[in-house]
Length: 185
Image (cartoon, rainbow, N blue to C red; front, top):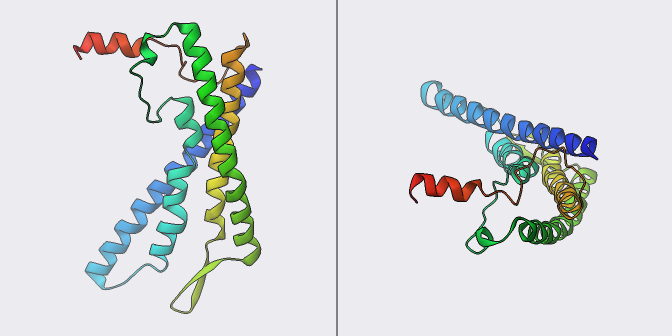
């Protein structure tokens, strides 16, 4: 079981790395495009298409799995902090199961849309030249599918005595409370 967790962690980190590369590529291309435009009146072709159809989508959706592992999604924990560790695991598993259902429902239509764009050979044209944009559509279902798998795995490890191996932030931790008290919040 721990091997599956380690694999999911590795996959989430690889996906996040792709997202980070998208951010770096976007920064480099936009900076170079602005410099060339202002200094030499030159433009880098397809900058807008690459930024909006590839880089931004990859940067936003590829790290979803790692975000879940590190417990960095937006959450409100007013009542949750008062629960016992066992109750936190039960409720945490229920929330993960619900979120996995939503993520799975999103993944299917996103996959269909990506396949439609792939089969159509979706592209954008700039100055009589084409650039393929269909590949960027696969970032979304990939990110949501990985998030679904991670959430389902978390449910399994929260509701059973099996150890995870995913190195995720545990749902029954109480370090947030101790840190808040230590900082005087």
